[in-house]
Length: 428
Image 1 (tube, helix red, strand yellow):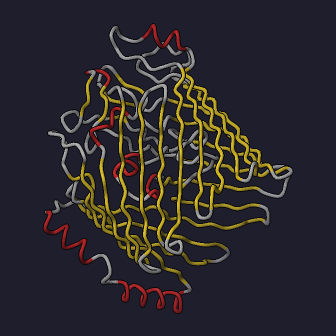
Image 2 (image 1 turned 90 degrees about the vertical axis):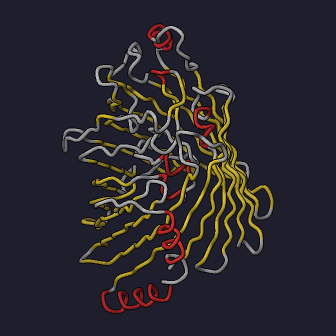
Image 3 (image 1 turned 60 degrees about the vertical axis):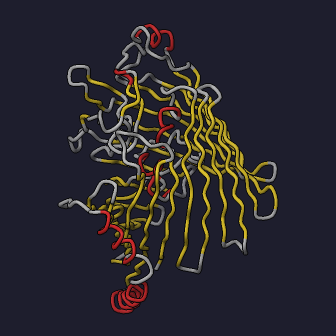
């Protein structure tokens, strides 16, 4: 759609108009659609605002300032369900109006043991809590780092998904005719470490990429085989496509590109020690740099994730995870790097902690999620408070705090992007 500049005064007006006022009208629309067309309508209107904790000359002080309307419609059509979910966004930071179609798909069962879903949908699997190994599908890291709802971490893809059940194993097959890229940190809204120049860059150096755009040629294929035995869920995974973020650099154009990637993995999950434990592994085959001697393409890797979650006390839960990225062909990687360039460790270790406490008859949820890397000596803290004013109205506040000893490490590069935010949501 055409994007139009939004002045701050106009954005404030939208924030005021989009919260409690249309609730009654939307409820009447819900009743009309359900009674006349057997269609369910849900959604919300929301306002979110946030500011940086560290002022940067090349970035705006406001980290998030937006009004959002989401509509989620579903209707039984023939022998299946048609679903449509879309967002209308007034973004005061980017100064534009935008629309996003998050879901538009049809789900049906041609046979008793076969489920099909065709169209735009959110794809996800794996065992991790905000850590991903065999979930190679597209993410929106920009949304995740500025304080949008966790729902917006996952991007939708135009895909065909088939589930086959009832045999010795359950089978999930996914085909994406045109790969969906992740929304990565490119400097337009958040600053990042720019390796070629060896410095933190922002809007003064926005990275561009060569998007994969050949339908039926730049495709993704994914497979999951799973079975539950004696209370343990076992799964095998396969993926054939591309890195979801641009892990290659073309030195001729200085543009990023998406190298080819294959992933092979496994996971298990079971009840243990009063909680739920999980284990996940994956081999990342970087098919454009299998020897690890091309400094412009990310090396192949082995990845490991171990986690456990349980109730610690009444209305208090906790979860711990250990994550490992081991860079393969490390000697070749070191030999290929330019003199003086900071080197990544052969093993990147990462620990996470999640604590969640419910208060005030479970209307108030306090949570803290921490990423900490002892090898990189950096961290990302995500405190959050969510309060339900009533069944439809809720307020949420939180922060994204980044810290690190070095500018070139994953969390350390985002230190200047630390922010706090506040949101108000009216559901219907």
